[in-house]
Image (cartoon, rainbow, N blue to C red; front, top):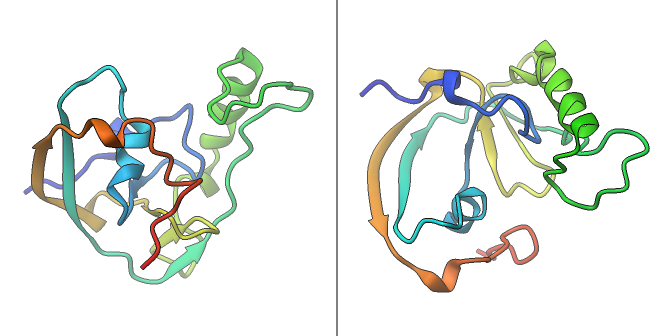
Length: 141
């Protein structure tokens, strides 16, 4: 009934800004979930996307970094991402838009708490989805 809160958003690693992230493909949520859990929970949410803009990802690596990890944890990379996420343009949709999507349209991001609310919570186990990467093998409609 209260929706989601941006107070819980990750402010160190979010490729498209400080936002609520949603996807049609449930593997995306599992891709970012802790792999140590044997039971998972998935939220089916109602999302008011409105006018949606395509957004470029925030760089994952600081200049001179030699890491190939998407979530590089070197201090220089983490500080660079945290500094970028503090910028206003990474905490809201562009002027004239209500939400953003990635260039591949795999996820949608909303930047206001009232633009999404949970509808159902599913609890499940599915070992076959462990390690699935929806960025490398996207669902085809």
